[in-house]
Image (cartoon, rainbow over all chains, first blue to last red; front, side, top):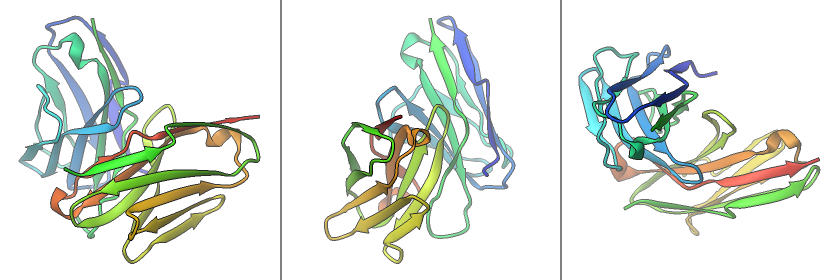
Length: 114
Length: 112
């Protein structure tokens, strides 16, 4: 079973607040990802990282930023939250070794911005 | 742009029925196709299908990849209420640098 954790699991905040969504994995995986998922919609990749000090923007434009200072930790930050940021945010990781890309997901953070 | 389409979007069956979920894709330099099960929390990995492994089976679940038709099916036999979930299909393309493109998923509801 994958060991990938996200906190908080649920967050309700007001517009304009700065928030950081935490993601940690204990599997030593090099690759980590952040997805955004609205109800009934696809997972959309917003950020990814291939290792420490490596971060890239994903396919879906996002006002969030990420950092990767340690292998196990990949936090996502919103400097000024807006109601349009209300969504579920899923973190995932996969090992660098191997040709293919089986990703393990965390439990998600459901964010509501009022 | 890589694209994954799943059908049906939702399905309601009775316990014991057999279901077939469909996934079709358009991707540059196909590498692999993955199936996930998503209940209330995170997607959990079910199968990975590649050019060298086009059929997988685990218990009541099985999946086949048709590279000619650019599609895959996920079969669930003797369904149980615990199979109720969203089933996600994702594809990794050669030009995507380890990124996955996901479909919208099929919401399966199994009634007792």
